[in-house]
Length: 245
Image 1: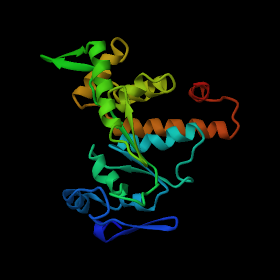
Image 2: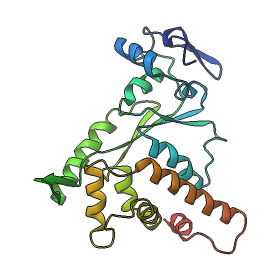
Image 3: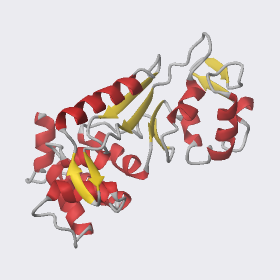
Protein backbone atom coordinates (compact mmCIF):
# COMPACT_ATOMS: atom_id res chain seq x y z
CA UNK A 1 0.00 0.00 0.00
CA UNK A 2 2.93 2.36 0.64
CA UNK A 3 4.47 1.60 -2.77
CA UNK A 4 1.44 1.64 -5.06
CA UNK A 5 0.59 5.06 -6.47
CA UNK A 6 -2.25 6.59 -4.50
CA UNK A 7 -4.39 7.29 -7.57
CA UNK A 8 -4.29 3.56 -8.41
CA UNK A 9 -5.71 2.48 -5.04
CA UNK A 10 -9.31 1.49 -4.45
CA UNK A 11 -10.40 1.94 -0.84
CA UNK A 12 -13.06 -0.47 0.44
CA UNK A 13 -15.41 0.63 3.21
CA UNK A 14 -18.05 -1.96 4.11
CA UNK A 15 -19.98 -2.52 0.87
CA UNK A 16 -18.64 0.57 -0.95
CA UNK A 17 -15.51 0.99 -3.07
CA UNK A 18 -13.86 4.40 -3.40
CA UNK A 19 -11.27 5.21 -6.09
CA UNK A 20 -8.53 7.50 -4.74
CA UNK A 21 -7.69 9.21 -8.01
CA UNK A 22 -7.51 13.01 -8.33
CA UNK A 23 -10.95 13.06 -9.95
CA UNK A 24 -12.58 11.80 -6.74
CA UNK A 25 -10.70 13.04 -3.66
CA UNK A 26 -10.14 16.56 -2.34
CA UNK A 27 -6.38 16.10 -2.62
CA UNK A 28 -4.56 18.69 -4.71
CA UNK A 29 -2.18 17.62 -7.48
CA UNK A 30 0.89 18.40 -5.39
CA UNK A 31 -0.59 16.38 -2.49
CA UNK A 32 -0.25 13.26 -4.63
CA UNK A 33 3.41 14.07 -5.28
CA UNK A 34 3.99 14.72 -1.56
CA UNK A 35 2.25 11.51 -0.47
CA UNK A 36 4.16 9.43 -3.01
CA UNK A 37 7.34 10.50 -1.21
CA UNK A 38 6.16 10.42 2.41
CA UNK A 39 3.41 7.78 2.60
CA UNK A 40 5.68 5.09 4.03
CA UNK A 41 4.89 1.71 5.61
CA UNK A 42 4.15 3.16 9.06
CA UNK A 43 1.66 5.66 7.66
CA UNK A 44 0.04 3.30 5.15
CA UNK A 45 -1.78 1.52 7.99
CA UNK A 46 -4.38 4.28 7.64
CA UNK A 47 -5.75 2.30 4.66
CA UNK A 48 -6.62 -0.62 6.94
CA UNK A 49 -8.14 1.17 9.95
CA UNK A 50 -11.72 1.58 11.12
CA UNK A 51 -10.80 4.99 12.50
CA UNK A 52 -7.76 7.26 12.20
CA UNK A 53 -6.08 9.64 14.63
CA UNK A 54 -3.54 11.88 12.90
CA UNK A 55 -0.85 13.35 15.17
CA UNK A 56 2.16 15.55 14.52
CA UNK A 57 4.90 13.84 16.52
CA UNK A 58 6.31 10.89 18.43
CA UNK A 59 5.12 12.15 21.83
CA UNK A 60 1.46 12.12 20.76
CA UNK A 61 1.84 8.75 19.06
CA UNK A 62 3.33 7.21 22.21
CA UNK A 63 0.86 8.73 24.67
CA UNK A 64 -2.57 8.72 23.05
CA UNK A 65 -3.09 4.96 23.28
CA UNK A 66 -2.15 5.10 26.99
CA UNK A 67 -4.55 7.98 27.59
CA UNK A 68 -7.28 5.95 25.88
CA UNK A 69 -6.62 2.98 28.18
CA UNK A 70 -7.22 5.28 31.16
CA UNK A 71 -10.84 5.60 30.09
CA UNK A 72 -11.12 1.89 29.19
CA UNK A 73 -10.77 2.29 25.44
CA UNK A 74 -8.43 -0.11 23.60
CA UNK A 75 -7.70 1.58 20.28
CA UNK A 76 -6.11 -1.56 18.81
CA UNK A 77 -9.19 -3.68 19.52
CA UNK A 78 -11.36 -1.00 17.96
CA UNK A 79 -9.22 -0.91 14.83
CA UNK A 80 -8.15 2.70 15.34
CA UNK A 81 -4.74 3.66 13.93
CA UNK A 82 -2.62 6.48 15.32
CA UNK A 83 -0.69 7.90 12.39
CA UNK A 84 2.32 10.09 13.13
CA UNK A 85 2.85 12.33 10.13
CA UNK A 86 5.90 14.04 11.63
CA UNK A 87 4.67 17.55 10.81
CA UNK A 88 1.51 19.67 10.74
CA UNK A 89 0.71 18.80 7.10
CA UNK A 90 -2.49 17.09 8.22
CA UNK A 91 -4.59 17.99 5.21
CA UNK A 92 -2.24 16.22 2.83
CA UNK A 93 -3.24 12.98 4.56
CA UNK A 94 -6.80 13.67 5.69
CA UNK A 95 -7.98 14.71 2.22
CA UNK A 96 -7.36 11.13 1.06
CA UNK A 97 -10.70 10.38 2.72
CA UNK A 98 -12.60 13.52 1.69
CA UNK A 99 -14.63 13.25 -1.51
CA UNK A 100 -15.54 15.81 -4.14
CA UNK A 101 -19.02 14.34 -4.36
CA UNK A 102 -21.26 11.58 -3.07
CA UNK A 103 -21.01 8.87 -1.97
CA UNK A 104 -18.94 10.13 0.98
CA UNK A 105 -16.65 8.07 3.17
CA UNK A 106 -17.68 7.55 6.77
CA UNK A 107 -14.39 6.42 8.30
CA UNK A 108 -13.86 8.81 11.27
CA UNK A 109 -10.69 10.91 11.18
CA UNK A 110 -9.47 12.89 14.19
CA UNK A 111 -6.66 15.42 13.90
CA UNK A 112 -5.02 16.05 17.27
CA UNK A 113 -2.78 19.10 17.21
CA UNK A 114 -1.32 21.87 19.35
CA UNK A 115 -2.55 25.43 19.16
CA UNK A 116 1.16 26.44 19.14
CA UNK A 117 0.30 29.82 20.64
CA UNK A 118 3.23 30.39 23.01
CA UNK A 119 2.41 31.14 26.63
CA UNK A 120 5.94 32.49 27.03
CA UNK A 121 8.23 34.50 24.76
CA UNK A 122 11.96 35.12 24.66
CA UNK A 123 13.05 38.77 24.81
CA UNK A 124 16.78 39.51 24.74
CA UNK A 125 17.51 36.07 26.10
CA UNK A 126 14.98 36.39 28.94
CA UNK A 127 11.92 34.13 29.10
CA UNK A 128 8.79 36.16 29.86
CA UNK A 129 5.17 35.15 30.21
CA UNK A 130 2.77 36.53 27.64
CA UNK A 131 -0.10 38.75 28.66
CA UNK A 132 -2.86 36.34 29.76
CA UNK A 133 -5.63 38.04 27.84
CA UNK A 134 -3.61 38.17 24.63
CA UNK A 135 -2.64 34.52 25.05
CA UNK A 136 -6.26 33.48 25.50
CA UNK A 137 -7.50 35.60 22.60
CA UNK A 138 -4.77 34.41 20.19
CA UNK A 139 -5.47 30.82 21.25
CA UNK A 140 -9.23 31.20 20.70
CA UNK A 141 -8.59 32.64 17.23
CA UNK A 142 -6.19 29.83 16.27
CA UNK A 143 -8.53 27.11 17.52
CA UNK A 144 -11.45 28.63 15.60
CA UNK A 145 -9.36 28.74 12.42
CA UNK A 146 -8.42 25.09 12.71
CA UNK A 147 -11.87 23.86 13.74
CA UNK A 148 -13.35 25.52 10.65
CA UNK A 149 -11.45 22.92 8.61
CA UNK A 150 -13.55 20.13 10.14
CA UNK A 151 -16.05 18.56 7.76
CA UNK A 152 -18.22 15.45 7.49
CA UNK A 153 -16.03 12.59 8.82
CA UNK A 154 -13.06 14.82 9.74
CA UNK A 155 -12.72 16.72 13.01
CA UNK A 156 -9.92 18.81 14.53
CA UNK A 157 -9.10 18.55 18.25
CA UNK A 158 -6.87 21.45 19.22
CA UNK A 159 -4.98 21.85 22.50
CA UNK A 160 -5.74 25.20 24.16
CA UNK A 161 -2.47 25.03 26.11
CA UNK A 162 0.39 25.74 23.67
CA UNK A 163 1.88 22.23 23.36
CA UNK A 164 1.20 18.71 24.58
CA UNK A 165 3.83 19.03 27.31
CA UNK A 166 2.51 22.37 28.53
CA UNK A 167 -0.99 20.85 28.61
CA UNK A 168 0.27 17.93 30.70
CA UNK A 169 1.90 20.37 33.11
CA UNK A 170 -1.49 22.07 33.59
CA UNK A 171 -3.46 18.81 33.74
CA UNK A 172 -5.33 18.08 36.97
CA UNK A 173 -4.82 14.38 36.32
CA UNK A 174 -1.31 13.95 34.93
CA UNK A 175 0.59 16.98 36.25
CA UNK A 176 2.57 15.32 39.04
CA UNK A 177 3.25 12.15 37.12
CA UNK A 178 4.47 14.25 34.19
CA UNK A 179 6.73 16.37 36.43
CA UNK A 180 8.14 13.28 38.10
CA UNK A 181 9.19 11.92 34.70
CA UNK A 182 10.53 15.27 33.48
CA UNK A 183 12.65 15.75 36.61
CA UNK A 184 14.12 12.26 36.25
CA UNK A 185 15.27 13.07 32.71
CA UNK A 186 16.32 16.72 33.05
CA UNK A 187 18.16 16.32 36.35
CA UNK A 188 20.26 19.49 36.05
CA UNK A 189 17.34 21.88 35.57
CA UNK A 190 15.91 23.88 38.46
CA UNK A 191 12.39 22.50 38.77
CA UNK A 192 11.82 23.61 42.35
CA UNK A 193 11.88 27.42 42.13
CA UNK A 194 10.40 28.34 38.75
CA UNK A 195 8.98 25.09 37.44
CA UNK A 196 6.71 26.54 34.74
CA UNK A 197 9.36 28.95 33.47
CA UNK A 198 11.90 26.12 33.31
CA UNK A 199 9.52 24.06 31.20
CA UNK A 200 8.70 27.06 28.98
CA UNK A 201 12.40 27.79 28.49
CA UNK A 202 13.06 24.23 27.35
CA UNK A 203 10.08 24.34 24.97
CA UNK A 204 11.20 27.64 23.46
CA UNK A 205 14.84 26.55 23.15
CA UNK A 206 13.84 23.09 21.84
CA UNK A 207 15.84 21.31 24.54
CA UNK A 208 13.01 19.30 26.11
CA UNK A 209 13.43 15.54 25.56
CA UNK A 210 9.87 15.12 24.32
CA UNK A 211 10.09 11.57 22.97
CA UNK A 212 11.87 10.18 26.03
CA UNK A 213 9.41 11.93 28.34
CA UNK A 214 6.47 10.52 26.39
CA UNK A 215 7.97 7.02 26.36
CA UNK A 216 8.55 6.95 30.11
CA UNK A 217 5.22 8.60 30.91
CA UNK A 218 3.33 6.10 28.72
CA UNK A 219 5.10 3.23 30.50
CA UNK A 220 4.21 4.65 33.91
CA UNK A 221 0.56 5.06 32.93
CA UNK A 222 0.37 1.55 31.42
CA UNK A 223 1.99 -0.02 34.49
CA UNK A 224 -0.33 1.74 36.92
CA UNK A 225 -3.38 0.70 34.90
CA UNK A 226 -2.06 -2.87 34.87
CA UNK A 227 -1.80 -2.81 38.67
CA UNK A 228 -5.39 -1.65 38.89
CA UNK A 229 -6.73 -4.30 36.50
CA UNK A 230 -4.84 -7.02 38.38
CA UNK A 231 -6.70 -6.04 41.54
CA UNK A 232 -3.82 -4.53 43.45
CA UNK A 233 -5.00 -2.81 46.67
CA UNK A 234 -3.34 0.50 45.77
CA UNK A 235 -5.35 2.10 42.97
CA UNK A 236 -3.28 4.77 41.16
CA UNK A 237 -4.33 8.19 42.42
CA UNK A 238 -4.19 9.78 38.95
CA UNK A 239 -6.54 7.06 37.70
CA UNK A 240 -9.12 7.84 40.38
CA UNK A 241 -8.80 11.56 39.65
CA UNK A 242 -9.42 10.86 35.98
CA UNK A 243 -12.56 8.85 36.67
CA UNK A 244 -13.90 11.61 38.90
CA UNK A 245 -13.11 14.28 36.29
